[in-house]
Amino acid sequence: MTLSRPYIAMAAAFAAIYLIWGSTYLALALGLQTLPPFLLMSARCLVGGTILYGYARMRGAALPSTKMCSIAIMCGLLFFVGCHGVLAEAQQRVPSGVAALLLATIPLWIALLQFLIPGGKRPTGVAGALLVPGVAGVALIAWQEVTSGGNTMHPLDVVLLLGASLSWAVGTILSERYSSEFASTALAGLELLAGGVALLAISAVSGELGTLKWTEISAVSLGGWAYLTFIGTVIAFSAYIWLLKRVAPAMVATYTFVNPIIAVALGWAFLGERPTSLILVGAVMIIASVAGLLLSGAKSAKNDKLSSSGEPQLSSCRNDEGHAGI
Image 1: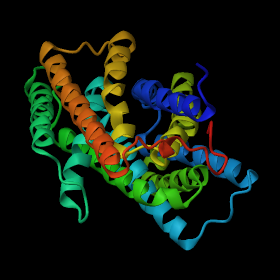
Image 2: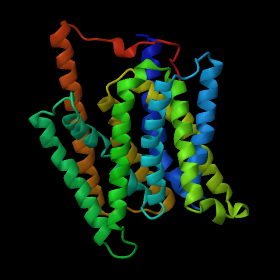
Image 3: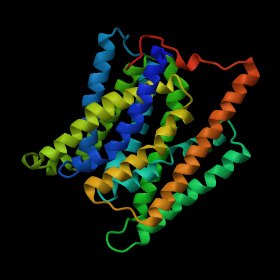
Image 4: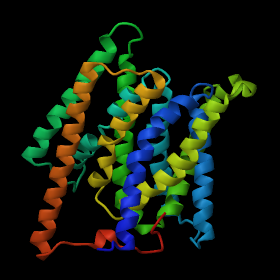
């Protein structure tokens, strides 16, 4: 059976956010060797955003409306300052695999936010029960890292990384609500530019620009920045935004239980970040919680569609506005 272009595009987009974003934790660790965090992420966003928005304009995208700019600014701050900027700052001290595991809590935050926001879908008893092992896994990893000997992890770093996860979850819900009104590539580019400008301002205010020794920037760090920018940002983030227009946010967020596995494996292989048995147990608890939560949500959504129409809905695989393959 030959797969249609929309299904192939969707499979490629999921592969991008699964595999590429799992490897960006390693790329970030390499970039941070000689580059300061906010400047690194600012350069990533500004270059990536220029490429994506420039491409959208070349494809005929209209000038952004005031509403589109407002959404782009809000999402850009949540995605790239509140999440990526904070992640980069914390990952100067936190192993890349542990950072990835704490950011894997994004779907847990989404479930809680949907319970709290007006009009949001209330989680079932099963969904509530599935949150418990995820929260317990986070607590186990945090306890292990904070109390272990040697280079212990500061409790504030745990708070920062969980806050970064929350920021991305809020941005995901906001983007899902409004992104269908705008061209996905143009919106992604504007979000990156907004986040990049804010990160550059933070870099300047924090003194990074004044203390950076440009001649000491290594080729390894530049390589890490290039991978983050052209692979992790241009390809993977555009795939993420593209998917949000076609798939429920909880399903898009399934990348969060694939990314940590890749990140932990790469950190172990290339950075010598050997995970302890407690971290591995906590990782299994988080991944199991996230996987169960997302599968439960997908089943519930499918049942809702079947009960309302009597047949499965395939509109999520539409190929509108020429966005397939982005």
